[in-house]
Amino acid sequence: MSDLRKAYQVASLINISVVGSLIIYVVLVEIIRRQFEHFISFVDPSEFTKLRYILYGIAVFNVFIIRIFRGLLLRKSPSDDSKALRVKLLRSSILTSALCEVPAIFGLVLFFIAGSVRDFYYLSFVSLILVFLTFPRFRNWERWAGDPSKS
Image (cartoon, rainbow, N blue to C red; front, side):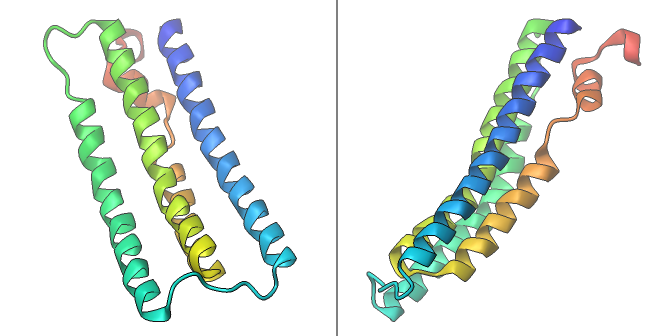
């Protein structure tokens, strides 16, 4: 099962990298916010409200997309060997990590378009929660992959 552990370590590193990118986004937003105290919006308020609702809606829908994609990617078939199972676990973890970052990116978009720091932090917090909820756990990987020595 050392190959499974290696795949798990890669998945964990990717998830940690997503958390690191969230921290970088916060630093970036705070630097820009301090440099441009009187940030001017690029959109009128009514258009911003529409865009805001759309992005929040997609961010909420993203939670369901994560669950659906994980379920689809982690479907086992009788012909799957241990390598195929590792690949499925790793692929699922990478895709999930990328999808967890989507709300924070929407928050960045809202910040850059309208200077909305509040929206950025709300959506970044959603991303952070998603990363922690979906962070890979080796015991779960072993159980799913069917390691007979751990059963």
